[in-house]
Image (tube, rainbow, N blue to C red):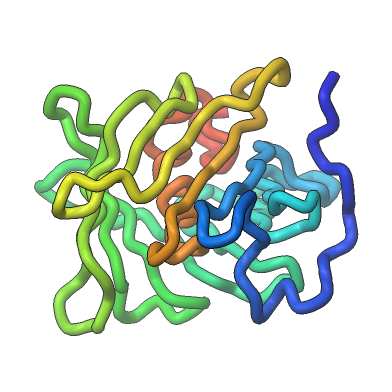
Length: 202
């Protein structure tokens, strides 16, 4: 079986610097493993192109999974992803910066139209960036994220040999890598059956 995690120690500067990309000025490529490294936890462990720990999600089995924190290699919160309750617009997940959960910066809304999986919309008044659309199949780990001009800005692709529990996330320059991972967390919540993070689907 191919190695999932060649290195287990966070690289120096991993907190303040973006994960290493596969080429100069090219996309940032991450390997996403649908497994927590902590005992009795579900979640994600994410490695950069050099095999160093970049991000992680750890959700204890006793938790509902309706709120998930994406952390960097040092365990500092990057984004909190929380399910929106009592909405008439279909399943939605709110993305908050860090652990602050009063004002979301993005909304990820499940789509029921054609090949579009989800709409990622910047919340008004937060100074957040542009909005995006996700197309493809999360179940097959084959998705593309498009910006408003239909440019592919991020892509989820299966990793050879190791199945759907390990996949690649490639993020183009100019797009926040932590935000792309937060979108992956929301897609996991909405489309994975069973989901790693939601107790009702395990």
